[in-house]
Amino acid sequence: MATDGNDPVKVLIVDDHAVVRQGLITFLELQNEIEVVGEASNGKEALQKVKELHPDVVLMDLVMPVMDGLTALKEIKLLRPETEVIALTSFADDEKVFTAIRSGATGYLLKDVQPQDLVKAVLAAERGEVQLHPEVAKKLMHEVLAPHKEAAEIEELTEREREVLGLLGKGMSNKEIARDLSVSEKTVKAHVSNILNKLNLPGRTHAALYAVKRGIAAS
Image (cartoon, rainbow, N blue to C red; front, side, top):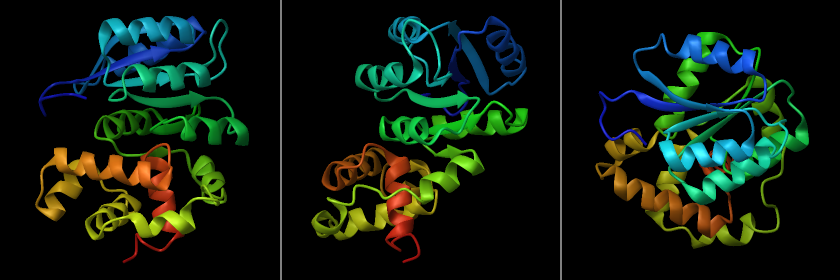
């Protein structure tokens, strides 16, 4: 994650089509808040670039040769959990959507996304906020999240963890939650990690949807 509020968000572009990569690079480099630090044409290259460049956000296609985006996403989150990954692809395929989110993607956007919405998504991802294409969000809201776990383990959350979960459900970033609860961002990150572990959820996207479905976000 960017360490200074004035530092640009470091972005890695991953797509097997050179023309797509160049288009994204050309547009994003016009944004003062964003610095494109590299590009890759497949998941294997993406992993190496993440090791070398330490990007804040990876914009990655899911269908690529050598190593596909879903496999790369899982490897990136294992290698460098603090790097946020946005899936940027052509189809809102149910299986790919669910797998990407379960694997830790911070966002899932379709390639028909408006340019300014893409910029907003990148900046939001760096803050730890979830950004989903409306069609993707609709699909996820109909997914049953860890049905064999949630009923039993919701009781394991502390009162403060439930508060944090509720604020996640309202779409708040770590910084906003910290301000709302008068605690540090580091403390919020620790609470989020505990919530994910206790509820057996793979990422904050699932936690936010979980909160909405359980009515915790409205409390």
